Amino acid sequence: MWLRCRPRNRADAGYCGLPHILRQPFRLYRAETAAVLLLIGAAADLQISHFLYNPGSMFGKLFEAIGEFPASYLASLCAMIIAFSQNISIWKRVSGAILTVLLSLMAGMLLITYQHGPKALGLIAAAAVLIANAFLAKTVCKNGNPDALRAAKLGLQLFVTVLLLFNLIKLGWGRERYRHMVSTGDFSGFSMWMIPQGLVTDNEFMSFPSGHSANATVIMWLTLLPDFVPALAKRETLLKIFAILWIGCVMLSRIIMGAHFLSDVTMGMTLSLLIIYVFYQRLFCQNGSSSDTAS
Image (cartoon, rainbow, N blue to C red; front, side):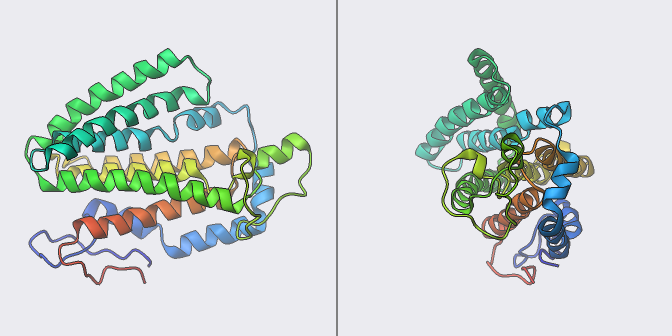
């Protein structure tokens, strides 16, 4: 198993692993699972897209519009938690406040981008995000739990890393999107996921990997909340199920809309899970070593 975790023991200063609520999703999603999905994609990406493609699907349009929202929303919440933290320097708190405003604007505008809605609606959504963040951050920070600040740092680093890394890979991979092949009636440009096609600037040639799927996977950050929000201590299973369902719906919707192939969404989710694991190890491990590492 590539992400092997053992039960968390807070009394063990040498423990370096994932919190108990993250264990099950990582156990379910093994390296073998990713390998099988990528092999299926290599053999049948085009055929799967032929079968599932339905650009008029309301399901597909819905998750196209909201699929990435949790990533930018959670990043803005993390910035707000930093702004509300008392045990850090004032400039870091001010930086957090500025970031939460910018990220709230991003979250609000994301909701109208794909449906070409009015900008005023996006601004209203951004204001709602700010208000919700202020309430939630105050609740999270009132107990002064240091895990909350570490989780906020993890969330911001995760969001920025996913945003930068995936856009760089897309620029260098140059894989044509299925919907573009359909629109031109030419499928000769189809390429297997593991073969880069060169540098591109056209969005229709940025199929691999899926940014929507990567950003959707950021929602796994929610499963950290029970560690420092007592009111959610008994909601662990619910958060886990919600996160997994959200990721699955976004991945499926991207294939339905012809924006990505099976291998694209698989790699998007896999890389994001790996990034979460790496950042958690770095921010929450006390001694910097553990047997709970990739194998």
